[in-house]
Image 1 (cartoon, rainbow, N blue to C red):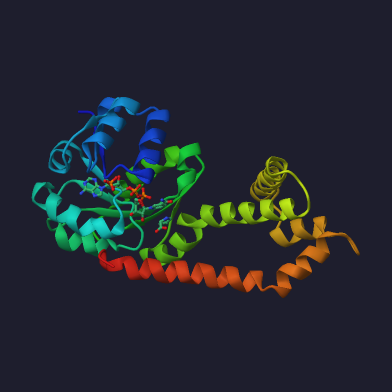
Image 2: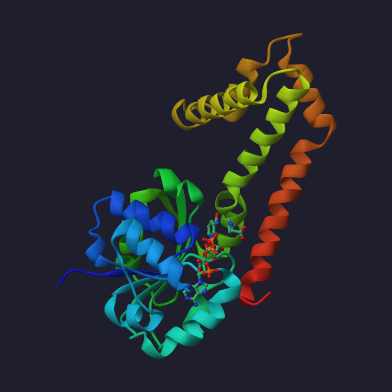
Length: 269
Ligand SMILES: NC(=O)C1=CN([C@@H]2O[C@H](COP(=O)(O)OP(=O)(O)OC[C@H]3O[C@@H](n4cnc5c(N)ncnc54)[C@H](OP(=O)(O)O)[C@@H]3O)[C@@H](O)[C@H]2O)C=CC1
Ligand SMILES: O=C(O)[C@@H]1CCC=N1
């Protein structure tokens, strides 16, 4: 029997995963989606050739259920779903903040739950998906989850106690880089460059720096030192970043994201 996977609450992250699975060779006939609005269900059907069903039907038909609704919608989804989920289903949560114990308390005793924090670069197969086992998830469940999310990028196992930190760094991480690109493009405008050229220069600098960070095996400090010439331009910029407290701001920002992830733990805040 072919295994079916259902994505429940197919919004931005659910669709990113779904599209990646299809790019990676999953047959649309082995995938199910659910949506709250009929027009969204129709859009997913038309775009990917997948069947859109109710949450209850997905729970009955699919061996693996990937829940990608907002943390605040998870309680209501589980209330609707719980009576229909046999205990042998693998339930994968993609939501920020919510611990595996939240699912285990609402599903049949012994249901395996895996928590995953992925990110939007799943759309270009460059996600990082951080994976933790709930109390009934086995090595097989983790490996299966890695196989699904490995199709849209890298995966990393962490103890669940590190998931809120991983969410701050990796789940939200792409937003910080988009924010930096936006701010640096504004700087280019101030310096007299046309917006499109400023954008292209900063994006290419970001791509070049990202590839060197990934492929050069060199520490970020070494890479930065190589750009920073004595009495040159870069050190003047670095002095401004330090005197404006950018390092401290980033540490505080990620701490705030981690704290918000913790607050979302109850699923209704
Ligand atoms: N966006 C990101 O970068 C990341 C998000 N996440 C996590 O992924 C999850 C989804 O986030 P995101 O994709 O941004 O949010 P979206 O709002 O885009 O997606 C959630 C989807 O779930 C649908 N939905 C809500 N309740 C139900 C229900 N009962 N039955 C069926 N569908 C339902 C919503 O419908 P409707 O369209 O009607 O609102 C929406 O389409 C969150 O838990 C978030 O923490 C994790 C990593 C990164
Ligand atoms: O902002 C959020 O809550 C979600 C989770 C991680 C990225 N986006």
